[in-house]
Image (tube, rainbow, N blue to C red; front, side, top):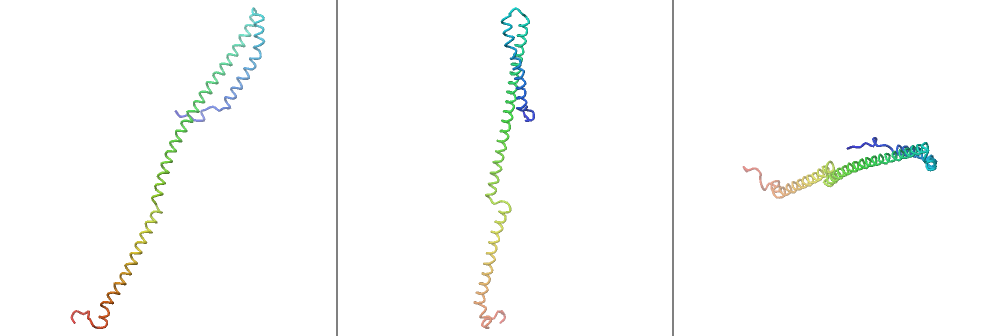
Length: 166
């Protein structure tokens, strides 16, 4: 059962209702003392008895209205409690979802995903390739130097011929 806050009555509504009941109760009580005294002093006069009974009925009516107001306020209070519990339940579900998302984000941040991780991987690959190329060039230079040193001097000096027919 979903309760909308718009459906609930405001506190001002109940305050006004209570003020209305209080105002009728005070006017009803003001006449009860005189009617009671007249009824007790003149028990045989039905007019006093009728007036007293009418005032008592008004008092009971006011009491009944107070009881109804109390029940209505209690029902509204229960509705507000249910609404609050529903909202707390929804908030707790949202908190769990938020915690799961935060955990996933934290795991992703720790694993260097996305552009940052790709940049780091590409930088590492570039450094490895650069060092590989550098040492290959150094190796080629050393290799040419060794070949020239071992065979080139003899060829240029004419001691050895590179032509197989000679």
